[in-house]
Length: 103
Image 1 (spheres, one colour):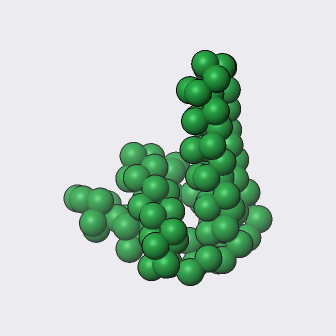
Image 2 (cartoon, rainbow, N blue to C red):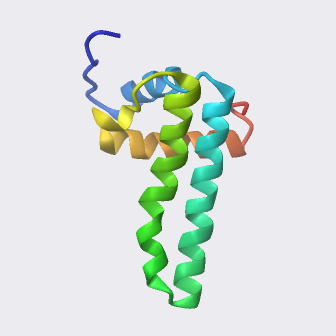
């Protein structure tokens, strides 16, 4: 895609986001990273070891970006649409957990 599309709403963005996540390994890495973010966040909050919260962006983006660069072979949507992309990560996780999206 030569020019990045513009979106007026998340509902316009989400189909584009899913199209950027067609590779099953990329989706699995997003899934693993998102669940690990939840686990580390809960651990940090329950144990009051708040320094672990600093790992959340590294974990979340690290898994996702590996999926894009190594398997999807595209640029993460985060670079152009950071807020929509963050929301897309969690909606896609919900869709995977509920069986709407296969991974």
